[in-house]
Each structure stands twice: as structure tokens, then as C-alpha cells.
Image (cartoon, rainbow, N blue to C red; front, side, top):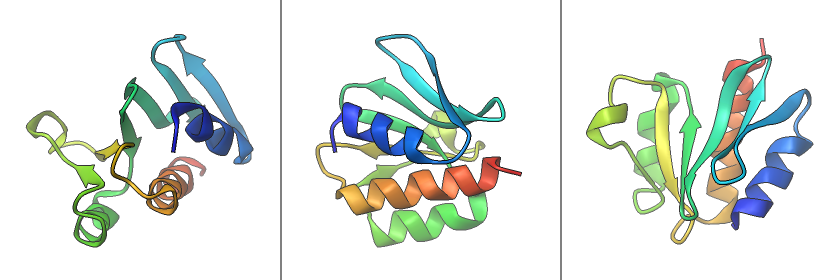
Length: 100
């Protein structure tokens, strides 16, 4: 996926709004982070800790958890390696978690 495709997908989800900057856009629902573009190849996606391991096991080349994110409900997605379906799955998990 491209960053533009990520944005279009995130904005297709109910009540998701774009915030952030032109270089680092982010998408929120009810002021809770769903996904943020870290750089042109990396997303930070908020996912439940209970689902994070499964996501990492299913798509080991697509997602990672650098040390700075270990204690948080987040993963990094690498757009140059992640299948679009994997990215959409993670965004859906984030939306479900944040849409209460």
C-alpha cells in the first residue's frame, strides 16, 4: 500500500478523521489514534496487546515492535513488505479498539 491508500482506507472507516501534519498524517476516531504515518515506508498502528502477537506471527516480515513501542498498544507496519490485506487487518483492529 502507498501512504495515500492507507489514508483512503482509514478515512473509509466510520468516524475516522485525519489530523497530524502533511509529512506525518494521522487518523483518529474519537480523538484516539488509529494509524499514523511515521515516514514514507512506516506506519504506527495502535492494536490491542492481546492481538499483537498473532499479527506478528501471521505477518512476521510486515510488522515489528521496536523497543520504544514494546510497552504500548502499537506495531510498526512496513509498507514496502506488508501485503495490503495485512495493513487493512491491523487498521481494522485499531479502529475496533478505539471505536467505543
